[in-house]
Amino acid sequence: AHHFHMEFDEDIKEFKKNIFRDDKMYRLGLEGIVSFDESVTEVNIRIGTSFISAEQASLNLEREIPPGTTFEGLREMSRRVWNDLLARTELRDIGNSTSEEGDFALRTWYTNLYRASVYPRMNFEYDVSGDPVHYSPYDSHGRIFPGVLSTDSGFWDAYRTVYPLGSIIRANQTALQMDGWLNAYKESGHLPGWASPGTRGAMTGNMQDASIADAIIKGLFADDDKANLAYKAILDDTESMKASNRKGLKEYESMGYVPVGRGIGDEVAVTLNYALADFSVALAATERGDSAN
Image (cartoon, rainbow, N blue to C red; front, side, top):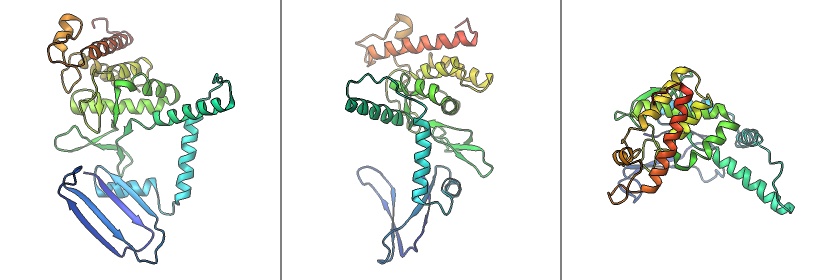
């Protein structure tokens, strides 16, 4: 469930709720309608959310947007945080012949850098003791687990864009993301190729292995226990047919490629992706001193 805690700076005149049976997009969705006196022309709303509980949503609100926080103050704080991140890179030789082309190149770079920094989402919260906890979309009972969790990311293209860049300009955040993917592995039994928030089985191949291997080689895991678990996760992935990670595995192992004409699908793409992923795993094996694999 998605829990909300809202606080208004004006008195509520009326509150109504309605349950959508089927609005062509959602089933059993909840709608809330809040009304104010006609004399009210502006309302400031502080909103806290949680996948854990309404109480956690209230706690998140107090921590992230405490009472007295203004809209302008929050916007300025967000601007400073983003500027600090974007300022970690500098284009020194754009290679354009006119100032207009140079301005366009700068806007393009920093816009893309912003977008590359939005995902994956970190899907965890801090409990009353300040420890990270998360609702697990991989658990059939919807239980709460300790630690961080990563989600909303597909590795099919991000393995060669988002993750290598992040490992260079904000290694600490990428390390946190990797810890989140390890928890996904522990709770689901495999590394998700596309999580939203749980495994969606979208996108072909299993390029998550390349990203995890890169993190192992770059030393982004805090200790040997995490690095060993990460290595085990990608090693398992080379022999896994869970979700959509390794379709055509039998043919790939026996023939060295995924053949057409057997109803597998994406044969050329998965062959290339498996080869690159396996090469990445081999590099991680060398890093971990595993000559057997």
